Image (cartoon, rainbow, N blue to C red; front, top):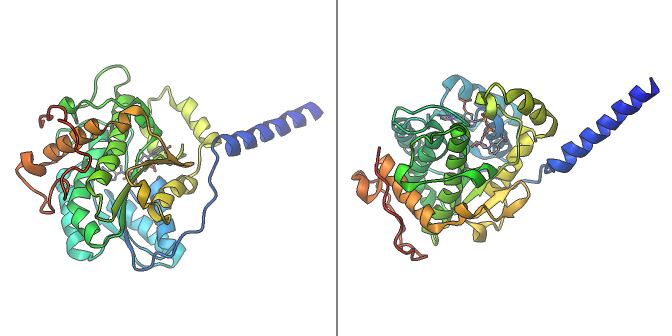
Length: 344
Ligand SMILES: NC(=O)c1ccc[n+]([C@@H]2O[C@H](COP(=O)([O-])OP(=O)(O)OC[C@H]3O[C@@H](n4cnc5c(N)ncnc54)[C@H](OP(=O)(O)O)[C@@H]3O)[C@@H](O)[C@H]2O)c1
């Protein structure tokens, strides 16, 4: 009996050490007053997005939950209104897997909402097939849909500056391999699902880098952030064989959603972050991303390829109406970028 109690005690100590040592859960910090500021949180109905929206609402912001399910979006908005006493929390429909839906959302938002100070590109999927637009689902939801959304809202962000775009990326970008000539096509091979997710997360970090470069001098700043390893429903589509390993690990060691939201909220609200625009943050602050995520030629090729795939920019014919490309030319004067990708 004594031995059993000792073993249980030791296990508890070990668990506490692992939980609070390895995951280094950041403590919720004091947040600034956000009354009079408007924020969009994509995927704000669950996981890290809902926790981020809750905290922004608590600080007094007007928060738009941009979600694909009206039922889940309305439910989350009403829960957040109830919990915070802030009645300016609304649902608007956005399905990032459909470029048509992204355009419809942007046009409704621009018609109904005069201001935008914070765009939190959070929604994400870890796996999936092909979208109605013909792209890999993770690539479109995690990157391409957000790319189009950001472009369509950029003029509003500029007119409300100082404003910020926060892109929820992941440390999984380390295994990303983006090829401009096959952008948006699902990768093949044994680990294609994992590769697809990592590629989309590399695109997130590069998107933040290039957007910051192009927005220099406009007071629109941009940050890519890895929220830590967070116990959410993100990996519900993980292969069956992986789940028995992943679920207990997530339950024991991962951050909870509100802890995971702290790094996102830091990028959205911390004072004095402007000089770090375009940088990659983790739950421990600014960090150097992996080499591919620091490749300016790749960042530019991804940007131009993304413009083409969503039908914006000079090659796409259809312009977004907010001055595509850099307002003052490309400040870093990139050398000739890689060959332009072809639309699918
Ligand atoms: N959890 C982690 O350990 C971790 C680590 C690094 C990075 N991240 C990143 O954190 C972000 C949030 O993920 P999470 O962990 O909070 O996962 P989650 O709980 O699964 O939340 C994902 C959110 O994205 C929404 N979404 C999915 N597809 C969408 C679409 N087509 N259109 C609009 N919204 C869509 C989901 O809506 P539904 O409820 O309708 O599905 C949900 O609200 C993702 O970008 C993820 O890559 C997570």
